[in-house]
Every structure is written in C-alpha cells, then in structure tokens.
Image 1 (cartoon, rainbow, N blue to C red):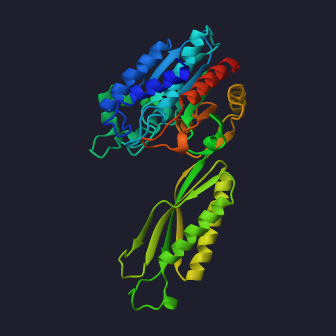
Image 2 (cartoon, one colour; image 1 turned 180 degrees about the vertical axis):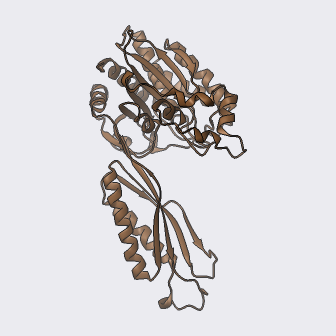
Image 3 (tube, one colour; image 1 turned 30 degrees about the vertical axis):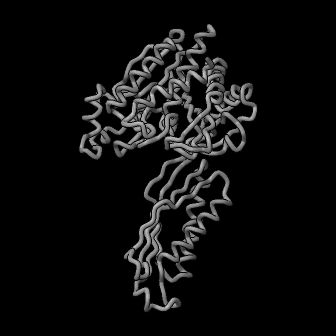
Length: 405
C-alpha cells in the first residue's frame, strides 16, 4: 500500500468521528472531537511519537532530536465546519504523521526534534473565536475569550475544562522563539488553481490579509407605482452599480479578491422604492498596501456612484487582519523538496486563513497546498487524490531531511 493510500484510508476512518454522515461535522471539545483524538493518537504512536494533550486541547506528538536541538512543528486542525469535507485541516495532521513514519521506515534520524500538532479549533464554528491553540503557543492568546459561549450558553472555559484541558494554564503555553525552528502546515488548496495547472502540489507564498467593510447607501423611499423614474433616489440601484464596479475593478488587480457577500435593504417590500441598502465588502490580498489601495479605490467608486444617483454613502471598516508572508528560506526549501516529485508545483498565495497565520508570531512559517477536485472545500464532496497526498508525504519527508539547523 502506498503512503497516499494509507492517508486516504485514515481520512475515511476519522471521518466517522462526526455528528452524522452528511459530510463531517466535528466541533471542538465534543464527543466527536474526543473520538477523533483517539484515532490521531494511534497515528502518532505508529510514527513513534510521544503523545500528550496540552492545556488548550491541542494534541501533540513529539519525536526527540539530539539534546538541546530546536524543534520543528507540523500542524493543522482537527475540527470541521457543519457538514464539511473529510480533508480540510485533518489531512495536514495525517500527512505529517505519515511523513515522520516514512522517515522512521527509511532509517533516517533528524538533527532536530519534531512535533505534530492537531489543533482543536480553527474554524470558529462552535465558539465566536478561533485559533486558540496556535495563539497559545505563539504567546498571543487573550484569556478573555474563555468567557465566550456557544449557542447553548456553554462557555469556552467550561467546555475546555470538561474536555480535560486547563483554562487557567493556556496562557502559559507560549513557546520559546529561539528553540522553535519553524512551522509547516499542509492543507488542501480549497481553490481551483492547482487543478487548472495540472499540479498535485503548490508552495504557499503567504496568507492574504483580510478586511471587511460595511457600506451603506441611503436614498429615499416612495410608492413604487407613483414616483416617476426620473425623480427616484433608489439606494438599491446605487448599490447595484457599486457591486458591479467592485467586481470589475477586482478583476484588474493582481492577487486580490473582493467579495460583496451580504446585503440588506429597507423597507424591503415589493411596492416601495428601497430607501437604504447595507452591504459587506470583503477585500483579501497578499500585500497589505495593495489591499489598502483597493479600499481607497472602493471609497472613490462609491462616492462617484452616490453622486450620480443622488444618494448618500458611508463606508466603515469593521475588521482587519494583516497579511502573513511565509518565510523565504522555507519557501525555497519546500520548492526544492517538491520539485523533484512535482516539477510543475507553482507558488501561490492562500486566500483563506489557517493556523499558520497565528503561528507566524512564534516562528518562520511555511505551507504546502494539495490539489482538491474542482477546488471544492467545506462540503461533503471535498476530495484529494491518494497519489497527490503521496506526493505531499514524499515532499514533507524530503523537506525535513534538507532543513538546516
């Protein structure tokens, strides 16, 4: 059996740790999470790793290098969205374990320690927060989030304590920067680029920065049958112009994504002109300057449209997350490792956020993408081929061997 087929079998096995069989639904600190950790412990043990769960609920498998040597980290998350796929997140844990198992089988000893990390909560579906595990390791954990509650009123503090974690010790998990060599996360691409390029793997250059804005157009309402067209101040017409303008402008930008994903209008009845429209504008880019420039362009477009349609406009930034570049040396090392196995592997940005974005506050980070069929993710149809995962396992092993301490 190939390493890739072994990964496929393991992913099928752990997919059963779900609320139901409609894809995978596995939230943090639940019976499904507990069942998944039992499976992951078996993977780590087969790779010869010493296993424990830390205070934040992160399951850690460790292989010791020479005394005093630094530690390299490989990780991803075990949780899923509602009715998600069987590869998102958990595949990175499977492939990390198998890469270390392969090195043992090949009789290779590394000159540093390695840990495989299975983080509890990256998706942020159960609690209104995410990335607790990596933020704890990076020393950026905010204890205030422990008081946040899920839809049933259960606090994160209570859920973690019941699960066997230690809420009062999470903040003390911060690792020593000087003793941490780097971090690698392996993840399905969640997009169509690798498939379009007919490449099993891709080397990530960085994680895009994100900002979200609330844009409101304000006009005037009136009876749909009595207000003449020339006299209207229709907020929805202005919003429609803005949506089209944003879409067209984003198509001209490099490595940038702009999405208007939510819209509400008032009074929202069939026989009245829309008085006000509120929408969300999300902008993602690998370069924060490019993102800022596009936000300014959006404001200018909005001002011009509102003037022409005789309506008011406001645009307020409600969320911002800076871009996180991957380490250049690790990018080069990963490209070299993948090159022998997958010569067509491109370099590309990640438009989605990952655990790596939080780990960047601790150490140099790197990411390897694995092709997914039709670019599908966060749904049951999510799929990565065994051969592609085999290529990833081979690349991870080669990458680790080539790393310099």
